[in-house]
Every structure is written in structure tokens, then in C-alpha cells.
Length: 147
Image: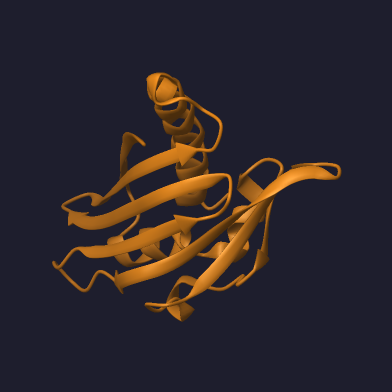
């Protein structure tokens, strides 16, 4: 497993940042080559135990990224929101810890992920983490902007 973290400041309030980042219906628009095929739902509909699948593919070649929400608490006022999501697919494994905190100018979104990719040796974990940090950072920025 490799670990990476993306931390982004946003002008939107924490409840809106939460809604945008966890709106699975929006992920199809911002994540290239990936479609949520099962469990496309709004952030407000996610609960502990919710399962969803994102399929990443080019034509017929691809893989399913199976995820399960282990815990989820939306932000409320000054209280931060947090979610833990477990990845249990055959190709991508690991976990995501999402935190959304209020700031005087909006919110801060922190996404920490442990990621393992089948077939990628542990010695190349730094490469997996670097590429994933860049890709997730790009997608999270677009989600926060409401693209």
C-alpha cells in the first residue's frame, strides 16, 4: 500500500464542499474514463454500508473499483465532517479518509488515501502515490468548483 494526501482550500462552505465531493452522480463528469455504474447517489443518501462501483475503462478493457462506506458524518456548523470508504475491488484496494472542516473563508477538504494496485510492486508505491495524488487532486478541484 502507498499513502497520499490532498488538502484543498475552497471558498464554498463545508456543507456545500461535502455535497460536491460526495455527489457520486457528478463523478462521471469530472473523472476521465470512469463511470459510476452502481450506487450513483447524492451525498445526502450515503450511509454506513452504502456500496458503489466505479468502472474505469477504455472500450472493453477496464476494471471495477468497488467501494463501501464504512463511516460517514456530514459537517454540521463548526463540526468537521468525515467519511471512511473502503476500496475492495480486485485491482484497486485500500481506504479513503475524507475530512471537511469550516474555515473563516469557506472550507478545507482533506483526502487521505491508502492505495494498492494489483500487479504494482511495493517498491513502486511512490509512483502509485504520486500519480494518484495528481489525479485525485485534479478531480477534487473540479468537484469543488462544481464543474
